[in-house]
Length: 180
Image (tube, rainbow, N blue to C red; front, side):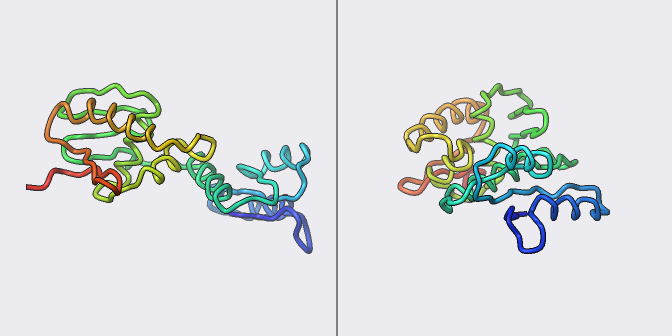
């Protein structure tokens, strides 16, 4: 939920507190508070009730990045937290990777990159999309970093079998089973 702190009848903090008290599912709804004040008290209040606080004014890129961060942090693990394409498997909760029954060690960044590619398997993603999703808004926007990490990842996951990580020149990268 995106909730403005300043509302006509009550403040956003009170609104979320009431909604949480009435929530019968018990599953918390990820919340991003929007406020005009950069006061520590507001940020502390939001941390008790919401997942983040952003101070106005902000650009759409910043808002999107903060929403993505809140959603990623609030992800509820479930039984389908294993991704698979061909003989490549990734355990999201325990951060394990196996290809052809052989464990593969990845750095945290390589793991996030592989996870993003697997969640978008069969779809070409651009360097910009990868930067936004894997490194998020706080990272400098150097697309050559993506190419470097793709190279690291390719050496590790494509070593054991048919090539799964493909470059689509001028567009981006795609994780898919090779075409025949």
